[in-house]
Image (cartoon, rainbow, N blue to C red):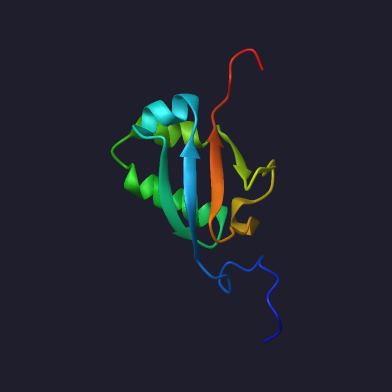
Length: 99
């Protein structure tokens, strides 16, 4: 086995950080932020979905949100390839009217 690059979720180490919800996502989540323990953005979001399974409007909204990880836009990258950092932040930005 060679060195990992941080892009192999199976080899990645889980780290702790904070998910911050903004605007409609904050309203639908019923809170402004919550912790995660995850290796990738996909894993952190899966945990959020599990925690908020009783909030279907939030779950639908998450599919339309933009994400920033430690201040950098995720864009169209596969969430499973976006590694998280210890003490990092995932910002959940719903679509805003008026762009």
